[in-house]
Structure formats: C-alpha cells, structure tokens
Amino acid sequence: MFTSACLCCFCVTFHCVLSIFIKKMSTFDLTEKQSYLQIQVKKPEPVFVVSGADLKCSYSGDFGANPRVEWKFKNVKGSQAYVVFDGKPTEPYRDRAVVYGSNLRLSKMTAKDNGVYDCEVSGNGQFGEVRVTVTVLVPPAVPVCRIPSSVTTGRLATLTCRDNVGSPSPKYKWYRNDVPLPMDPHKISGFQNFSYSLNPDKGELMFSKITKMDSGDYYCEAFNDAGPPQRCRSMKMDVRDVNTGGIVAGVIVALLLLALLGFGIWYANKKGYLPRKSESKPKPNVVYQPQSSYAEEEDGDFKQKSSFLV
Image (cartoon, rainbow, N blue to C red; front, side):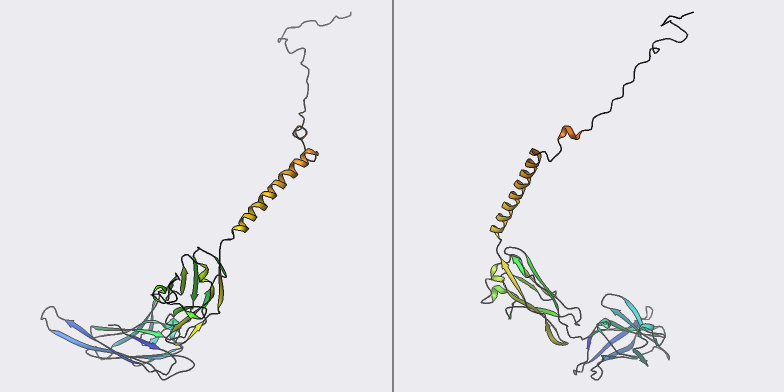
C-alpha cells in the first residue's frame, strides 16, 4: 500500500496514517494468522531555516521480543540505500538522522530526499513492510528561458523554459505581451488566428509555421505548490519575411566578384606577369657518350687498326 506526504517549511500541518495487514497462512491446517503493522508520517512543527520530518513506524503483532526494524530509501532515479541498518543511521545520514525506537527523524531535507521510504519489521519468522512517498516542497527559482530574437516566417520556432530547483517539478505558463497563452488557442476568442502548441510539463512553446502575427514580447512563469511563482525576463521575438532583395543582391555581388577575378587573371597573363607554360618547363639535360670502337670486337680476335713503325 502506498501513500504520499509533502514535507516543507510552511505552516500547514499534515498527518497521514498508513496501515497494512500482514497475513500468513499455513498450507496444512488452512488457519489464518494476522499481524498488524502501522506507519505514521507526520509533519513536524514549522521550521523556517531547514526542513525535516518524523517518520513513525509503529507496529503490533507476533514479531517476537526484539523485532528488527530497518529503514530504506529509494530516490526518484531508482537508486536504493539503507537509511537505518542494524539500529543505526548509515554514513550518508549520520549527521541528519536520529533513530528513536522504531521511528526515524530526518533534518536538513532537500529535493534530493524525494522518493520512497520503506519501514521493514521482521522477527519470529514474520516480515512486514510499508512504503511511503515523501516529497520535499521547494519553491521554484527564476526559470531559464530561451527565446529567439529573430525568426523567418514559415519556419519552426521553439521557445523553452526550465527550472531545476523547484520540487515537485513545476508547471510552466507562457505569456505574450503580458497576456497568458491558452492551451488551445482555437477555443479562445482573440487567439483563433494563432497556431502553436504548449507543453506545460516541459515548458515548451512551439510554432510549427510561425507568422508575423506571432511577433511580440514573451516570457515564461514556473509554479508549484511550494511557494510563489517565478518568471523569466521578457524578451522580444521578431518574425520577418524572407529578404528576397538581399538574396538577389548577394548573388549579383558574388557574380561581379567572379567576373573581376577572371578579368584580373586575363590581364596579368596578357602583360606577362604570369609565367608561360613553355618557360615553366625545365630543359632536359642530355649527356652524349661516344660509342667505343672496340664494342663490336669479339673476345680473342685482334685486328690492326693502324700501322706500326719498326
């Protein structure tokens, strides 16, 4: 069985009692034996500096003279760890957890303490467990907004808003020219010509095909139940048509530059500033070696080539 409790530094008291029946059945005599396990989650007196909570785990039943009571914590990301093991707070909670009897008192709680706390009681061959979801209330901070200053008509435009401080996660509301944007603009008079989609959980305002009518000053507001809403600074978004004249002018300038470059190359070649192809090739070096007069003589043959004087 699950329940939830919200813990914060405000003056609203909250008291939740969660109970569960632990049943054990014998497969032989088909008799039923019941044990009763109860857990209380009670908000402490208002605290204006730090927030904390008392988690009370009261039980009754045949758990023996010295039942074993342990507390576990599973955060919103799924990581699980012991808060109380063998009757003592574990190292991460040693400075801000106090165990008295089977109960647990936590102090200096932040949004990181959001999650599920398990009270487990075991003894005399029996086991009981109760879970409670705890949410520490933290007011939202000033959200970070990303609003483009200039957008071309017909394009996709997305405005984002995000706050990572508030707990529980805040919702988001968008404003244009100080007027809140409705979730469905087609159902509200005065917004029927607008076309956008809102995601209040993610803080996104999306225009699939933006028009000049969507120009204006935009800002976002983040809010939850923990405190006053916060809004980002208003920023102007200007929607403009495609600058056809600028594109044509750019093409003409590019063509003129190419023509000027071609004329410069032609003029330099005409004046001889550029090396010609015939001059640029290196002349080959030819080495002439006369053929030996004895190349055609066979080995062992001797022919007289000149006369001898005696």
